[in-house]
Length: 140
Image (cartoon, rainbow, N blue to C red; front, side, top):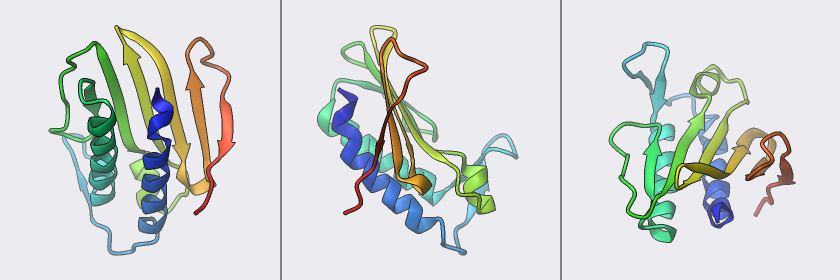
């Protein structure tokens, strides 16, 4: 089910790779002064949420950035961190992730973790939390 989102994750990864080199990017703090957010976080999340809404309109969403959560209508949820590692991103350290989890009736059934700087994504199937199915993202 979560595989449907792989294309948009690739698009978000490409956007983040390009933004990583933008010296003019502005970062803000949330409630915690060490919890950073930028336009890259927000835009990445919006890209992911648009795809979730298109493919899974009845699913709920719990998202990292404020004001984007949505209740579930069918017992399914997407847990989204659009830029997991904003502090590294800001510091110029090429190690961050796009993290998505899928929950059905209270059980985590799958997940997708993409590492944009490395072109690698991991699709985490249910019942194998320590085994990743690794694939290299294809460049267009």
